[in-house]
Amino acid sequence: MKVDVLLGLQWGDEGKGKVVDVLTPQYDIIARFQGGPNAGHTIEFDGKKFVLHTIPSGIFNPSTTNLIGNGVIIDPFVFEKEVESLETSGVQVRKNLLISRKAHLILPSHRLLDAVYEASRGTLKIGSTLKGIGPAYTDKTSRNGLRVGDIESPLFLEKYNALKQQHFAMAKSYHPDYMDIMIEGLSFDAYENRWLSACDTLRSIEKVNSEYYINKQLDLGKKVLAEGAQGTMLDIDFGSYPFVTSSNTITAGVCSGLGVAPSRIGKVIGIFKAYCTRVGSGPFPTELFDLSGDQLRETGHEFGSTTGRPRRCGWLDIPALKYAIMLNGVNELVMMKADVLDAFETIKVASQYEIDGKSTNVVPYDQVNTLCIPVYKEITGWNTSLEVAASYEELPENLHHYVNFIEKETQTPIKVVSVGPDRLQTFIR
Ligand code: GDP
Ligand code: IMO
Ligand code: MG
Image 1 (cartoon, rainbow, N blue to C red):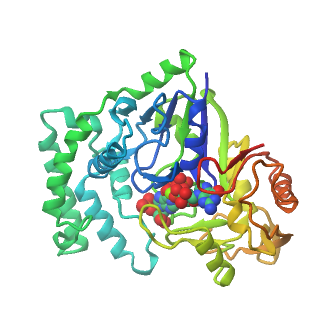
Image 2 (image 1 turned 180 degrees about the vertical axis):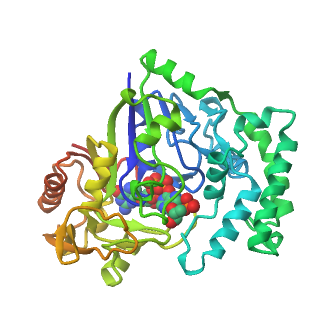
Image 3 (image 1 turned 45 degrees about the vertical axis):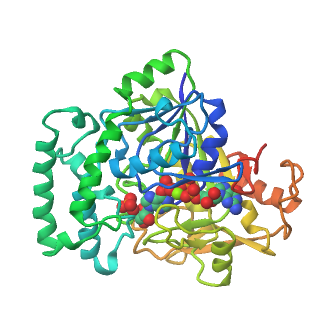
C-alpha cells in the first residue's frame, strides 16, 4: 500500500482537520508528519467542537490509529492539555495514539527564545504563534535538540538543564529581562514545573520507531493518510521566506517526517478555501482591505484556532494555487468554505499576476519585495444560502460554474466541496 496525503495549499487553516476527520473511516492510520502546536485543526460533529494541535484528526474514530511522526515537534505542556481535554469529552486517546521516539521536544526555553527573537525583529515580525516552533526546529537541525526518546533516559534532566542554560545565554543577549517573559500566562519557573510534570503524560503514551512501524503497516496492506499542518505557502523552502514556518509543509515532508520512500506516496489531496486567508505577517497579493475583506472574516469566522488573532482575508489566488499543486503533486482538490461566499453578488479570482507590467503565472523568487498585482476575473455569485442543499447536484448552478472554473484553471479535479464546519456539510462529487 501507499501513503495518501492531505495537505493545505494556501497559508494554513484551509480546513484540514475537518476533512481528515471526514475521511478517517476510510483509513487505518492517520499520521502527522511535521509542524507542532502552531497548528490548530478544528473538527465539529454532533454539536461539539474540538481544536487539535498535536494529535492527528483521526482520533475521534475508535478504530483508527493515530501516529505522531518524527517530523513533528511536541510540547509536553500543550500535549497534556490536549489529551486531558479529549479524555474529558470521552475520547479514547491513549488506546489509539502512537508517538515516534524521534520527534523533537519543544522546551520552555524554546518559547522564551521565540518571544525574544520575534520582539527583536521590530516591524519585520513573522507573526509567529510563539509556540517555540522556530527555535525547536533550529535545535533539531543544529543537532542540539532533545527528542521524545530522551525523556525515557536517566540523563534526561541533565541534558534538559544543559540545553536550557544555552538558551538562557542566547535569550539574555537579546533581552536582559528575559525571565520576565510569561509563557501561557505563567512565570518561566511555574511553566517549567508544569512542563516537567507533563512529560509524565508523554511517557505514558506508547512510543514507536515510527519509520519501521509505518512501513510494516503498509506492507500488511493497511491504509495510511498523512495529515499536513500549516500550508504550502508557509513552507520553509517554498513559502514567502522569511514569513514562513520552520518545516517542509509539502508532500516531500511526508517522506522525511514519517520515514517513507517517495515511491510509497499515493494520492495527494490538496485542500484550499474558496477564497484566501493568512494569519501573521508576510505577502498576500489578493488581500482585501475593504468591506469585502471584513465580510469574509465575519462570515467565515476567520479568527485563528491557535491564537485567536483575526485572519487577513482576500480573493482566491490561482497562481499561488497552481504553484502549490505543482510542488505537492496534487491529484485531487478539496474546496472549503464555499458557504462563506453565499452573499457575494460577484466573486473575484486572481487568474494571473502583473509584475513589472507583464502578466505572469509565476510566483516570484522574492515574494516579499516584488509587487504582484492580481489580475482578476469576475464570476457571478450564487447569492443564496447553501444550507438547504443535500448533495453537490443540489448546489446552485453558479457554484458549479465556480468549481468548473477553478478546475479548468488548475487542470485538477475538485472532488470534495465543503459548505459548513460540520462533518455532514461535506459533498463528495
Ligand atoms: P485547519 O488548520 O486547516 O484544520 O483549519 P482551522 O480549523 O484552523 O480553520 C478552519 C475553520 O473553518 C474552522 O473553524 C472550521 O470549523 C471551519 N470550517 C471548515 N470547513 C468549513 C466550511 O466549509 N464552511 C465554514 N463556514 N466553515 C468551515
Ligand atoms: P494550521 O495547521 C495558519 C503561521 C503563523 C506565522 C507563521 C510562523 O492550523 O493550518 P510559527 O508559529 O510557525 O513560528 O509561525 O506561520 N502559522 C499558521 N498559520 N495556520 C497554521 O497551522 C499555522 N502555523 C503557523 O501565523 O505567520
Ligand atoms: Mg488551523
